[in-house]
Image (cartoon, rainbow, N blue to C red):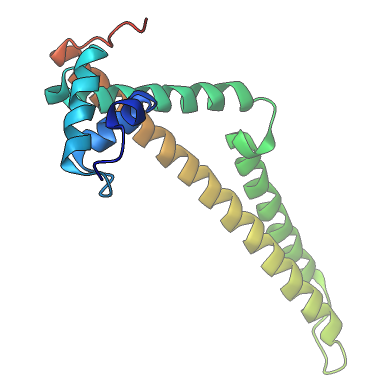
Length: 170
C-alpha cells in the first residue's frame, strides 16, 4: 500500500468521491488515503466536519434537476403526464360500463353461447387492467412528487439554518 501516490490519486477524485473516502464508504482505501482525502478537502475549501451538509446540498441539486426535467417533459411525453393516467382510467371505466350494459341487454346464455361470456370476460379483464394501471401510475406519481417536494423543503431548511456555501472552484 505504501507504493501508491495518494496525493495524485486523491487529486483526481471528484468532491463526492472525496467525501465518500473521508466517511469510509469505500472500504478498500487505507487510513492514509482518508487522511490525504481530508487534506485535499481542506485545500479545496471544504470543511470535512460538515460532510453531511455538503451531501445534502448535492442531493438538493439532484432533486431540483429531477423536478425541472419532470416539469419540462410532462407536456411532451406520455409517461410524465398525469392526465394520461387519468385518461387510462376513463377508458377502463368506459369499457367496463359498455361491456356491462351490452351483457345486460343480451339474451340469456345458453349452453352453446359461451363466446359471448368469453368476450364479456375479456373486456372486463381489459378494463380492470386499464383501471389498475392508470390508478397506480397516477397515485405513485402523486406520491413521488409529494415526497420530492418534502425532501427539497427539508434540505432547503437544513442548508438555510447552516448558512453553508459551496467553495469557489478555481
